Amino acid sequence: MKLSTPSQQPEKDHLITREATLEDDDALRALIAVPMTTKGVQISFQREPSYFKASDILYKHKLHVVIEDTVSQKKVACYSNGYRPCYVNREVQNFRYASDLRVDQHYRGKSLVKVLGVHVKENMHAPNFSQMIIFDDNHAARAAIQTPKTGMPDYYDEGLIETLTLTNLGTKRKIIAFLNDSSPNHTDMMQIQSCIAKPEHIQAMNHFIAEMSHYYNFIPAYNFEELQHGHRYFAGIKLSDFLLYFQNDKIVGMFGLWDQHTFKQTKILHYSPMIGVLRPIYNLSTLFSKSMPLPKRGESLKYHVLHTLLCHPEALALHHQMLADAYLRSKQLGIGAISFTLSHKDPRYQLNQFYKGERLTGMHGFISFEADPRPNFDNRLIPYLEVGRI
Image 1: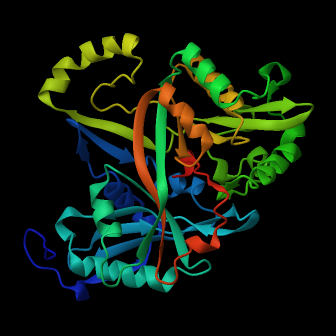
Image 2 (image 1 turned 30 degrees about the horizontal axis):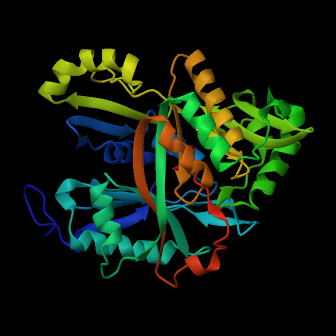
């Protein structure tokens, strides 16, 4: 398909690629918010009031890029490929994450892809590969990344993931039976105490993250002193939003309840006529189905995301208890929906079969112009995905 606008055929010479500046904020938000329709619902992923502030939580070192048509002076594409420190094979190193690839619908075509590819190749170093997540319903991204193209990096698939926005914990009897069958020697929850995180817990929280890197790969290398001091990497969440779980005075689990709606929104733009008519009935039925209700047109979906949902991968009873506590806290705050992402390789993922909510399946992988990075990763470690930083 050739690149086109309603009035002319843009040439590659008209396209310049450069690092985005604060003056591009409006254009970036417009590109990110391009509507998509799924199952009769038109939604828009928005970054209001500022794209740059919303990206504070993604990277410690940002790299936001725009492509501009110098004839129309229009920003026609963007992508981000910054990095953040993560535990990789139990050691802290910079880890790139590629996100927010958007192309104006009038400019989709081979020439623009090649322009993008040149810039990615010139700037993807230290490290020279990037982590990427593509959800199944993002057909444009799947086509752009997973289909081999000259001038674009190769895509290396790591495995499936699931993001679950949990709206009900399911049947307690079935979960208890599963836990007894699958983990007959699981931890007695009577031995576990929990409390809200306080400043005196920060050192132990940092140590716990490092300890979890012996089971999970790609965990962000958090320093919770930054959280205590209000660092922008932790925008929207504070120390008292974290719940810690102790056994014999040692942290064995933790999560934070994170409300990101002040800078990141999923807005409902339009319903099909049938869904628009049936929405009140559907919302009434969610009292019994335990599904997520549909907001009014123009409003955003409301949910909490879980920060550092971590415990030993075989501690299924503890994982379930943390989700139960997170769900209760979310309900007490008037929302009652919690979102988290797990790799299909994570033993804790088995419990998702019992929970009710909205599910998004995706592919976790890496892009690189050089060698496949996957052989360098310890395959005994479970991929960890921080939903609030996807």
